[in-house]
Image 1 (cartoon, rainbow, N blue to C red):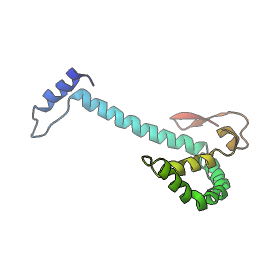
Image 2: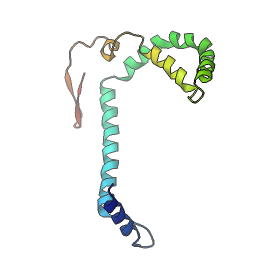
Image 3: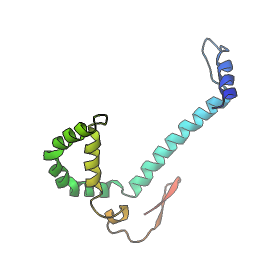
Image 4: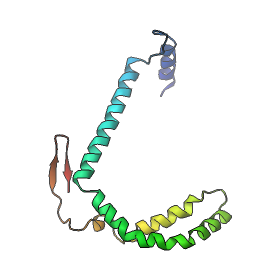
Length: 134
C-alpha cells in the first residue's frame, strides 16, 4: 500500500458514521472480492479433489508407509537430542520433519508413480464450475 493510499484511508476512517468507523467503498469492494475468491477457491478445490479421488491414493500410500513411520520412532528421540545439541537455535521439529520427508519420498517416483492405473489424461465435467483432468 502506498503512503498516499494509506493516508487516504486514515483520513476516511477519521470521519465518523453512526459512531462507527467505516472503510472506503473501494476497500469494502476489495474485501468482498477477497472473501468471495477464497470461498470459491476452497469449494472448487474440494470438488476437484473429490472428483479425482485424491484421498484414495493418499490413504493407500500412507498405509504403505506405516511400517517406515513406526520404524523411526525408537531412534527419533536420540536424533532430536543430537540435533538440538548441534543446533540449539533450531526447533526440535526440524529433525522430525526431515525424517517424515524422507519417508514420504522413499517411493522413488513422483506423484504420477503413486497413482496406479492412470495412463491417459481425460477431461471430465465437474458440475457447472470447472473441468478436472484425471
